[in-house]
Image 1 (cartoon, rainbow, N blue to C red):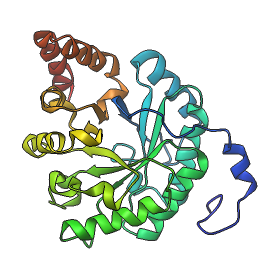
Image 2 (image 1 turned 45 degrees about the vertical axis):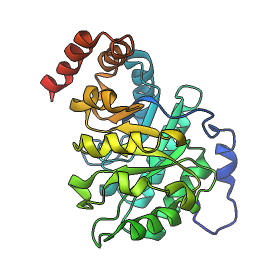
Image 3 (image 1 turned 45 degrees about the horizontal axis):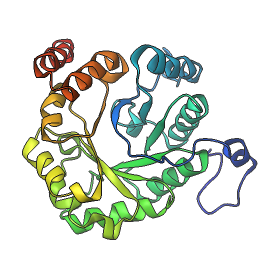
Image 4 (image 1 turned 90 degrees about the horizontal axis):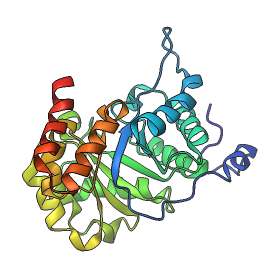
Length: 273
């Protein structure tokens, strides 16, 4: 059972989270670790290790932004109650240590996605992200935006990110098409998690939306260097849990235009994968 549900009066649990992280004052950029949901050998969520996990990311990998309950975190395989408890634990343990915590709240049910979005806002998350619903798939841009709009409206104070991952959702609507005029319909839209290998689509997203200052977060770790060339402002991925330090070195090499070193760093995660 959830600590509080959409439409109910505020519960005492809210007070506990009232001092948690405020909405971000700067654009989400750099590395964002797509966190794993730790499990016990009996298939229960192992909440006790999340505090150490936070410290490891910050101290050992130099990663201070996280993306919770996404593909790597198996969010869609968890119950709604489990997703809420995982989000709460990351926000609690990450307070004053992490820069930004984005919670993935996508679901097949619009009401469940809205409930997760409102919960993320109440616990003090820094943003929410949503994939396209993939059982009865939206058949065009307008249908997908209407779904995303309804979810974003449930947490109107939080930055909203679209999680584009067509290989898993089967929704082939190009991200470049979706972004055209999206802020007119979703005022809280702040960026894109682009988990696809179509670099032409990604590059067009960047080129056609430079004025909006969106966060363009690339989600295919082994192609990040190519995405940086196309204009990526950051990256969300699973390998940054354990190769964050190496990937930060690649970002630094790219920034100083040392492309040979950047390429050598890129080859490291590719070899591991």
